[in-house]
Length: 544
Image (tube, rainbow, N blue to C red; front, top):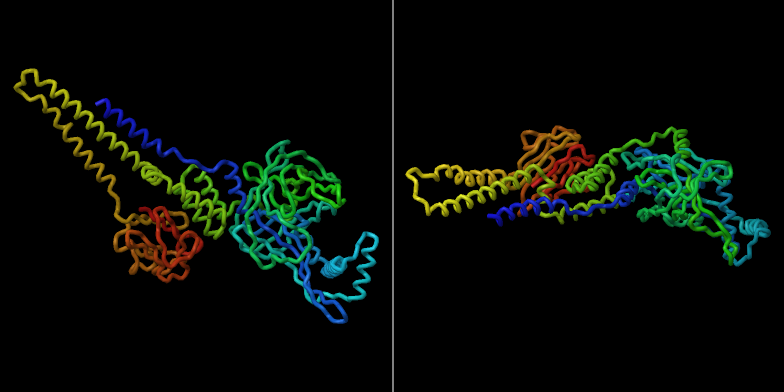
């Protein structure tokens, strides 16, 4: 009997202990996932076709000046903050096109002189350029300005400069606000730089890369959008030559990081990467970057500039509402909830690589869960009831074994005229009744159920039978009626097929979307959600 009691205790310990062993992301990884979707890459430049005389014949060549930088979304309606010097060329082109084009002819002449082997110095460069221009008579026959923003899922948009301040070297704040035509975008929260402390951790985020003039080979291409995140500390709180505050940091920042956010441990933006320190190379005398001496524009300075532009910030978006819930669920190890919220977030930002990676992590966690842990994640009350029932059954078995032992030990005494075993009848009947109840509780529909949610409100839960369930607006043709304009009369069919459950689009107008992609037919796993239409107003969740 003691062994049986010990077995009961061990059973309960194993049952609940198995549901606690699971690793999750640390706080810095969570911060990275929180920030990355809202960081963008910016391409700014001008491409020209120049015709000039070469050996008394006209020749045409393409040339370009431009830069790549970083930025971050501050408003879900497409407002992006970056450095002024990242968009400087395009701003100058808009303000004085002829001045920019004339400078591009000068740059083209310098390039040709260097290719010819001329030794250019600060003393002879101007004269040699003027001579080359006189001899070859270059002129621009075609020009194009390039203003591109690449958001984190690879989609590309043209931008419009809404407000601009030149670089710090030119007496400005080095901040710009640009606008793209997009909505429901991921946004970053702006923190405060007024309470920064020395040696506080800081995380610059952006797209390091070349930012020097040259042909814009990236024009029209989707770039690699894997954001880089470096770590450092606040080295000093200084002011520039005009007395404007700047933040010095030892975090690694280079060309291409310009305009990107620098965040604290909570993922709040506390500064904007802007410039580094230069020193002369001891061998060549050429300027080179000095590692560990980089500077940020304080976010409080940027806030004043953004306020002047009339742009509201620190407002949530539809994407952030779902994505924040997904991250909270990951942190709390609620893997099924996390999977659902990630799927909802992907509706607003399809093919976003960080969301796809996070979904793979979550699906891996679900796959590693044991049977009892999966049931606990789906329905804690049912698991508690099941464990209690098993415990009661084992307890009754212990009582029965104890009673039989007492009965055997009593055979040495004279048998009474009235049977003393009568009180034992309820005890013997109890196990059969409890076992039947447990069998009833554990019973579940053969093919699972569908739960329909419309605009966040649960419409109802429907049991899935072998003949399947049809969803749509026409009550005469479907079993699940959803009276929403985005839903077709007969929109989709869910039915068992060869030991699996599939969803089939029935030629709907607005489509059926599974895992962020439009489908004609897809296989459902327990916990999967699909939407009727792309915008996620009508969500159907399958549970087996």
